Amino acid sequence: MQKYPNLLSRSLQYRTDSTINLRQDHTSMPTPLTHDPSNGAPDAAGDDAFEQFNPATHRPRQRRRTSDEYDSVLWRMRSQLSSLDGVAEILGVVGAEVGVGATTVAMNLANRLADHLDGNVLLVDSNFSRPQADAFLGIKRCPGLAEMLAENLPLAEVVQRTRVPGLEVLAAGRVGILESVAIHSEAVAIVVQQMREEYAGVVFDFSDPSSMGQGLLLAKQCDGVLLVAQCERTRQESARRAAEQLRVDGVRLTGAVLNRQRSYVPKWIRRWL
Image 1 (spheres, rainbow, N blue to C red):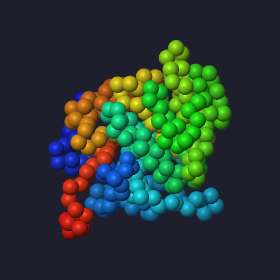
Image 2: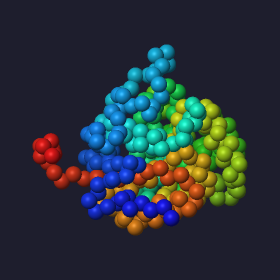
Image 3: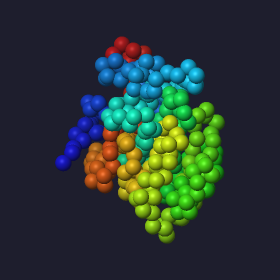
Image 4: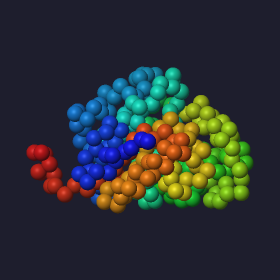
């Protein structure tokens, strides 16, 4: 049985290659983490894990406050994925419990992918019980993914553009529409394959494992899924139980991230540590 012994240690020091800390910001967004060459993650400007530079189609990268930190998360996730021979990677983000900031992490990862990849990136709100992408991004909630699965709507009819260059979003759709419809894994696989063919990268935002519902069929189609826990909130046993549940359900869990880590050491002292 696979174990996650360092998922939430008391010292909050992650030792596995697939985990990283996200620090607490004054807002709800995680703040940048200074790059440490010893952790094996390359700088964003020279990250060989991302696509090769193409001067004909390349969009200049936009350096944002959280870019270094999320670039490290992306590098660690993508380094564990098998080669897909140029096919778009399907990534997923799931919270160990409700309210740990999984949606914020998913949006930032999609944002960074849009900066790195030449083609468009799709952010998919697959949290059917508590959809949030519409509120965060100011888009229409429906029609969305639920209508696409239940009513066979074409992807082009439900995707919405955002103000971020290269980033499009697929809302969750009408709440409750999937409760009376049986969705088969074959139909889900076709939908995900269509996303692979039309986008350079896809990021799914899932609900916590206990309320994932039919979203589990989508999670099993992801090439890698990131588990999000919150500092000083998520209990060690809860995080381990969530990770084990995902593994038992057949989800490829490639790492974990500790969100909203607080630092009690003043910045002027941290510079000397």
